Amino acid sequence: MSKYIRQYWPGAPAKTEKDLPDLHGRVFIVTGGTGGIGRAAATALFHANASRVYILGRSDSAGKDAINTITNSDPPGDMKRRTADGGDEAIKSLYLDLSDLQTIKPVAEAFLSAETRLDVIWHNAGVMAPPEGSVSKQGHELSFATNVLGPFLLQHFLTPILLQTAKNNDTAVATGSVRTCWAASVEFPDPPGDDGILWDDWELKSPQFSGLNGRVQRYVQSKWANAILASEMAKRYPQLVSVSFNPGAIRTDLTRHAPGILKKVQGSLSYPVRFGALTELQAGFGSEVAERNGCYLIPWGKIGEMIPKVAEGIEKRGSGERLWNLCDGLVKEFY
Image (cartoon, rainbow, N blue to C red; front, side, top):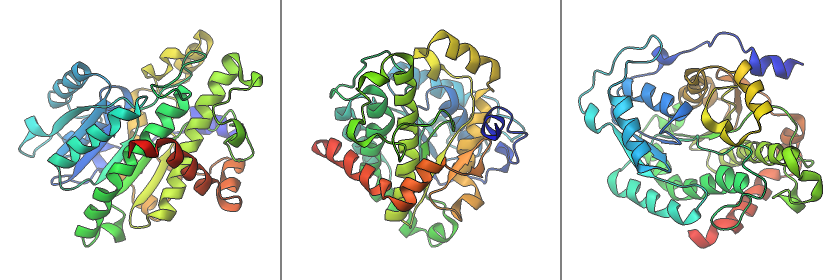
């Protein structure tokens, strides 16, 4: 019962947008930043004087609309309006389709040709419970492809610039200011498999995963996979802070593919996108997060505990390395 209370009644946030530091001189990426939680987070970054915020999404027109919305927005919550110059150039949009691995290297190259630093990336974009049989451009199950393989490949290209940013800043490693933030999800239902991944059927194709149960299980597995990857990345790259986050029960179009009953339940118990952004912002800037590299956040940015099977898989059975190697094998032809 406690995990339901944490999810749907998490209490008032301890920190809000006004607690963000001045972000002048810093550069950020938010995937899925053209709408929902991602756009709310990008709006807060903009008003906190970020030098540039790249919003990555599947529609050029949605990107242009988001730029216009953000640059003409009022500051969220009780934070102050942007004061830094260059507001017209502070938000950039790049095309990215995480369900097509061929689109990922070009967007990374476009970013790297324009910037010499990257301070934080939020792997925010995702898909939830798409129709039965949905696959990616490369033929992989769509939830795993979009929520796990795409972000993993994008991270591959951007890890070097994150490491360089940390190296160039004398205090970055000590303060944990250079980060990768991975979108996980709710603590229930439990994902399949002993570690939260069904290793011998990671696309969940067996008959027991047909219908609504399978669609939900594929989504849940993909989100816990991100938590596992965040933990593993913290081990591989201790110069960076890597964290996963459960943004909370938020009203977004992520549930567009979900069955009607799931949409109704989610809608009746969910919160505005601003609250999900608070969790993401805490992942990107919270000082206590830097002290718990590889941790998992729950609403609204509190450090939580992964469910036992996922935590035990990481600590005792090497699930992080195993998942990393699985993803590497599936995407390496696109390096």
